[in-house]
Image (cartoon, rainbow, N blue to C red; front, top):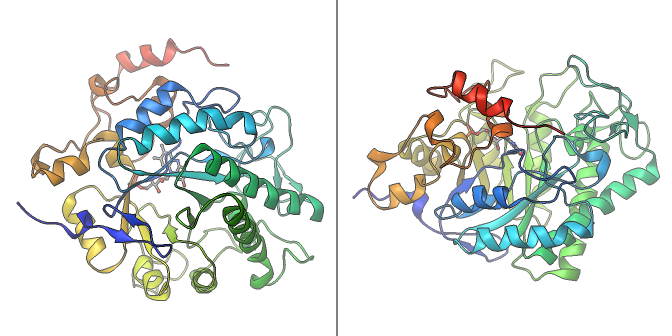
Length: 385
Ligand SMILES: Cc1cc2nc3c(=O)[nH]c(=O)nc-3n(C[C@H](O)[C@H](O)[C@H](O)COP(=O)(O)O)c2cc1C
């Protein structure tokens, strides 16, 4: 049987050993109640994927009401959510994975329907460059401080619920990234202007989260940071900005850096003369912090190639929706039985419910076999709020 390095343990900077290097990528599946409370369906769906991976990162949970980004999204915005989160953490941990709660505010990447009437907020009052985007309200200095506290309080809830850690979602154009971006952050106070100042919000969030960790958890509590290395917007985050940020993160107490990309081997979108994969460049700079790579990793061979030289962990998204037993199959030498395509007849067994199906059906990478009248029927039968 072939032995893979990605199946070997890894010790994080805080001394916690993770049983292997495979991570369930955070993926919103629209299964929470309307108020953000976890549902049994969501618990079962995630528990099904917690048997093989070393780390399981939950779908992103919002830290406050104006930060909610999707219908059916998990909330970590109020103490009333702790009881549900506790059941979720317990279910994940009972199958052997470390349970990491991903937290964020969507910032300008939401709308006042999803927030039930609250105007979206951001670093500056600049709408995202996409059709129909609402213009957000610029956060006042006091509100910026409140958002830092909201990240800290969401972390406290994760601790009280028994999670092994949190991941700060600083990627995919959401609020933390909006402060880093010269497109969405045009502020002239201490939170905007130079790159140094644009980084001050995420670094303040990390500081405050670490204080909460010290107060309520022990050193084994994991804090990770997810970032997107570049933006296409003009002006936008460049790879040089990110390299500088990654250097800064080396001096913080975080336990890993998670580099969000659609394809793990992607090169710079903004500078075609830079042909070295971004993940290799970040790994080289991240001398103190382990790196999680993600993006179109499907086969054990692809995962191994990434682990061999460019990352400490591989996160799998699509692939673990399609085959929740990917790791177990590789461990038992049955990789030939890994499934690489979703079939409509398997959706029930995979815990993929109708709103989730509707969310993913047109996404690249989900070529769902048998999707026709039958799935339309499933979707039509759902009553939306
Ligand atoms: C349905 C879906 C939901 C996602 N939700 C999140 C999320 O909640 N938080 C996040 O950081 N990334 C999210 N992502 C991005 C994934 O974590 C991952 O980076 C991306 O799918 C690429 O990896 P893959 O090719 O292995 O799927 C989502 C992706 C998908 C397909």
